[in-house]
Amino acid sequence: MSTILFFDDHFLHSRINLTRHVGQPEYVPEATFLDPYADVAWGYPSVIRDEESGKWRCYYQGEVPGKSRTVIPLMAESEDGMQWELPDLSDRLTIKNRHAPHQLLDNERFHEWCGVRVIPDSSGCGIRYVGMVLSPADQSGERKSYVVESRDGIEWSYVENAYWHPTGVDPGQFAYWNTDRQAYSITLRPSLADRRIALSETVDWVSFAEPELLMQADALDTPSALLYGMPVFPYEGMYIGFLWVYHTDPVVYAEEKFLSGTLEMQRGDDTSRILGKIDCQLSYSMNGMHFQRTERYPFIPNSPPGQFGSGCIYPSSMVSENDELRIYSSTSRGEHAQFRFDPDSQQAAITMHKLRTDGFVYLEPPGGTGELTTRWLLWESGELQLNISVPHGEALVQVMDAFGEPLDGYSYRDAVPITNDSTSTTVRWRDGSAMAALAGQIVRVGVRVTNGRVYAVKGDFESKTVVEARKIINS
Image (cartoon, rainbow, N blue to C red; front, side, top):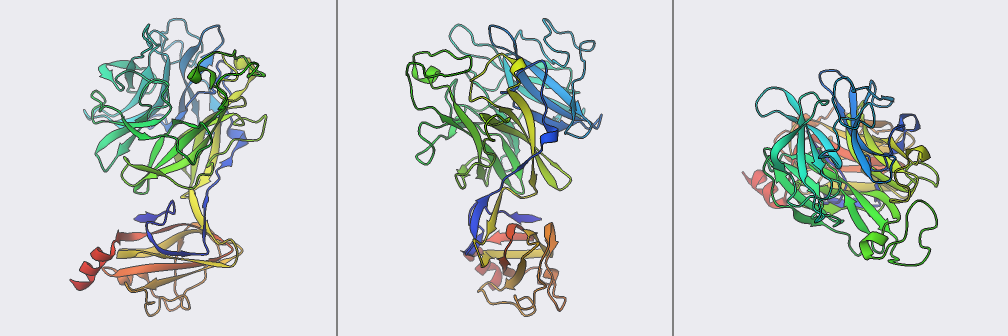
């Protein structure tokens, strides 16, 4: 099954009276999770369904009260991925200076972690959990970047001589399986306090490629913006990034700059440029290595003042469940670093949004009827499906030959109108014409829509260039 999403027009031959929009995930208030022991403004949750127990697990971190910054790794569990409980692991895990019952590691080598994931075990002994840990900074300011692993997701150990960054950086760092490379790609920062996005790679979680710069803020971003992190998710043959954009305060130094919170003014560019909001935009890649950005509108914007996410929101985990996508984020009411070391303020929470399957970007006519036509498709088998929402509108589908001429029985006039809202509507024509009958042919698909949204075109096909299509037609 192939899927055409509309991040750009690469797979389209034409687009008429259709406007591209960034999807807007829906906030689910009842899934909001507050940790009574720690401030989770920088929690970076990784939500995973544990195969053995069947429970959902949320791996994250939190700052505990104190004069210095103390961050601990934590885990919550859930039956449904929405209502979370804190397991008491104190009898199972021996931890020095335990700060919370659901703490997973002590602070001897741990300062922060981000991006826990499950990977197939190369020895064939089952599934193992992998996490990327940062140590406290040494006297030179550098940090060690440790790999930790676990068989059950609860008892963790450090992998000897495995360092995922040459100097250590601050979060976020996220790994994803790159099918094109047959390796794990890792998005991370180039160096400590360098708020840009770099890319590394590993095949064994012991040896790691030198980070290479992938992306930085550009002229279309807000003044003095920085890129804070970018978790990436393989999705329908491509790779989708949740790009955290840090809209900093461009004022470097001014008396009484900070009007509230627990910060004190300090001299120096990077230190004083610390307030600002963080939201999420979309990026995408066809090979998991070279990323582009689509419309520069927030995918998950900041919420209204006083609500979780009004200051910062860091979506870091995405799970498919019941024909929807669940997106988990750490959020704060305050701007970046506005409140520190104070869980009692309840300024931070882990939140969940839900998104329609394929709902990252959609095409919609601003009024009247819009139309798209795909590029050349080698149809291989089965029927054509649309992810489309037209409950009070209408959509028609046409199939054309390589030259744009409608095929007999497959024209707009022959189409059965689509008037529903479904992530997988099978396209039909009045005389019973079926796409399966076109197997082995080069075709183009047209979609006309009124008062509705088109999210995706799906089917068993391969997209071809005009040269490739001609070779097939002439063979």
